[in-house]
Image (tube, rainbow, N blue to C red; front, side, top):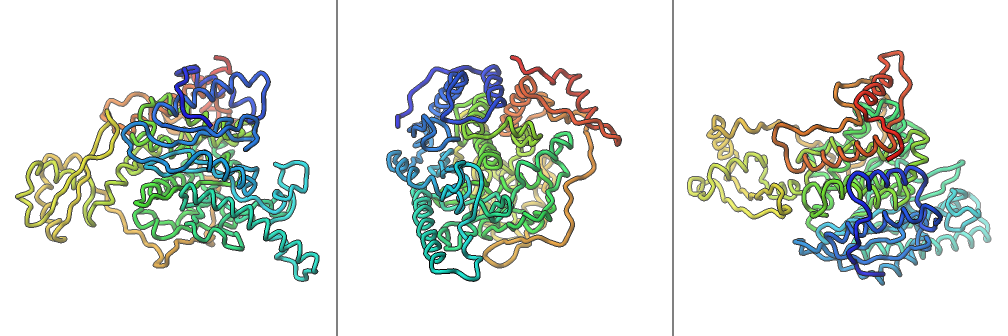
Length: 576
């Protein structure tokens, strides 16, 4: 372990990102690999450490030869404290953390243990794979990372159990008690309370055998003290359909009727009350709406008033997991809440390199199969630019009284700044500064206690014709209709689901179109995310590029897209 030290940048701007993408697209990163690529990987690692060190004090857990985990970074970063304005500090000690990691790593698939990757308000946002099954723990084959054999519940299905089998079953139980017990200790040490499972299965099945498990189906209920969320999200295979539809996510709905899909959406109702989302409709959401709603949920969880951390995982933890970790990192950065000194090109480099490349996403394999979840992540930024995804706004909304929108309260504050005497009989008004980053647009949180609906209606009537009223509009939205039980659980419905919808192409909406500067004013959050997306699209087009879709008889959408991309010069070669 070593404390952070300033490292000279290994490259900057477009060229550094292009070099990273080229290296990323050639082969999967493995910590133990050396050879000619070692120098390039070392530059990428140094650059990540330098970028982390801009804003954080951190320590490093050494994984130089993959001895901790073969597909985790050689320098695993433990963020300890924001070096700037954030007063929160992690209480985790790197020595104890490393000991717990060494003890617990076999509890999870491929040894991909619970690893903290984002520090937000003193809370650790972590990533991992799902729980390992019986076969992987016992290592029945010589290939530790190829799924084979049994499950932790394999013996439970046998009707007749001999004394020998019973002894083996007891040994299994003891093994899982020990290994998963260490995993639970690691989670508790990191103060993780919320576990978000993105698997669409309860257990992963290969060749008819259960090969991984998950916290939600642990028969001994070892994880009962944690808040478990089952938020099933399509795996990387689904993103081939995204590519085949000319990289159009709108209207693309996952087929929830497939035989292997058996994990229903299940969220504690206490975590849904602040979100205006009808979770019972999740099987009808397209890929855009599903990703948006899950991101809103994650942001709401990390903004809760407790000090608890969050774990996000899928099966192996290198496709869906980095998608949401990267979106969380970029969203919080755009709000000025983390990595506050980094420019758009720098935060882009950091999340591509650390969250995707160094944590083992198999980009080359996914590209060869057309499973372009990596491209989807950064192109998706255009769908989360509004303030409804802002963690700052989420914090402010906690103090809003029922019946008022934030815009209405901000208007009230603007009209009556400096005095509340005219409203003294109806309102009590209090304000505090927001923790926005220096140099970014800041808000003031307003706590407002109305005397009643009559006072609210009178105020709205008085300001309806004011000049400020033309600057905003309020969309009436229906209230959430959620079950009254403590858990929102939605199982497969009888309605049909489709994985396809009519293809369409909007003028000026090419996946690789670099957004132009807006002439109208845009929020700081929107402009920051647009800059990141623009930088990604420009570099991606010069290094990897989109795969052409064969022209279709009904509109030749793929051919039109290819002509457009070539016409604007975005279909680049693989050379710098």
